[in-house]
Image (cartoon, rainbow, N blue to C red; front, side):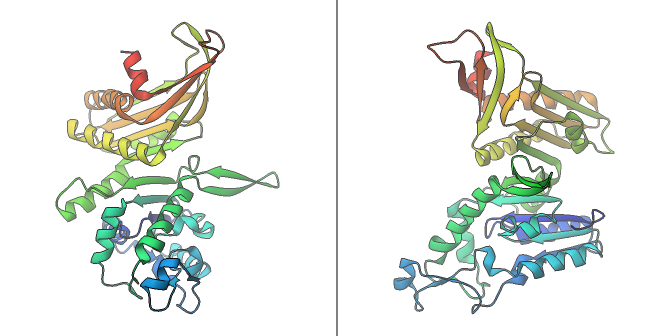
Amino acid sequence: MATRKCNVFALAGCTNSGKSTLAKEFQRYFGAADTTIINQDEFYKTENEVEKIYHPAAKTLTEQGYYWSFDEKEAINVNQFKERIIEKSKIYKNVIIDGNMITEMDEIVELCGRIVVLTLDIKTCRRRREARTDYVPPDTPGYFDNVAFPAYLRHLENARKRSNPIHLLYKFIQIPSRTDSRITFIDVSEPRCSDRNESIIDFREQIFNDHIKLTDEELKVNVVDQLVSHPSCGAISTFNGVTRDNHAGRDVVHLSYDCHDLMAYKKLRGICAEIRTAFPDVKKIAIFHRLGRVDVGESSVVISTSSPHRKTAIEATGRCIDLLKDHAPIFKYEEYSNGETKGTKGTWKSNVEDSQQNC
C-alpha cells in the first residue's frame, strides 16, 4: 500500500475524456514541485506481447486481419505500473495516475486514495478520437467501434459495480463500488463553459468541491460535514433525511432505493451547478444518497453545503433538497406491515412522484 502521507489520485474512464489534460491541471493546482503524473500508457507491452483480436470486421477492414488488444489490462505491465506509483509516492506529496483501464487493475486500485471515472457519449468520443494523430500504433479501421468503445463500456460497468476483496476473519468478502467511497463518476460530454481553459478549471472544481456519492453503506453525517468544511466558511448547513415508520396511515417497515447510477450522478452534478448559479458564495456541496434497504431511523440522504455566512448555506441546502426530490432519477420502495393494496405490501415510486404526493 502507498503511504498515506502521499495523496494517490486516479483519473480513469473513457478514452479521449481529457484525463491527461485534467492531470496537468491538478499538477498545476497542487504545485509541480509536490506533484508528479504517472500515465498508464507508459507501461504498455509491445505489439508482439499484446494479444490479437480476430474480430470479423478486422478481416475485411485491416491488412493484417486482426486488431491488437490495447484496451484490456493484459496489455499493461501492471507490476511495473504499481512499482512506479509506490516509488514516486515516497518522494511526492501527490501522485496523479491517468489511464483508461485503472479500474480494471486491482493492484493499482488498492493504492488509490480517490478515483474519478470520466464518462463520455460515443459521438463525442469518436469525434475526439478521430482528431487525434498521436496514437502509436495509429488506429486501424474499425478499431474504435469494434474494440475501443465496447471495451470502455465494459470497463465502465465494471467500475460501477467494482468490488475490492477485503480480508475479514480469514475470508474474502466483496464490497461493491456503491460502497467504495473512493470512486465517483463525472460526465464530461458537455462542458458547461465554451472556453477550454475555463472548462478544465470547472471540471477540477466539480471534482474537488462537489462531493457526490450513491452508496449502499450507512450514511454518516459527520463524514459528509467534514467534506464540505473549509477555512473560509463560517457556516455548514446539513439536511439529514431519515426513514420514518409511517406514511399515509400505513406502518412502514423499511425503504429501499435504486437508480441508474450514471444517470443519477449526472443529474446530481447538474443540481450542484444550479445551486452554484443561485448561490455564488457556496464553497462546497455534498450529496450522499443511500441505495438498497434503509431501515426506520436510518439516513437515506444527507445534503450539506458550506458558505461564509449561515443564510446562504441554509437556503442553498434547502434548495438542493427540493431539486433532488424534483429531478433526481432515484426510485423508492416503501414496504408496509399493514394497509396492503391489492395484495401488495409495498409501493415503488420515483422521487418526482413522491415529491408531488407530499406537496
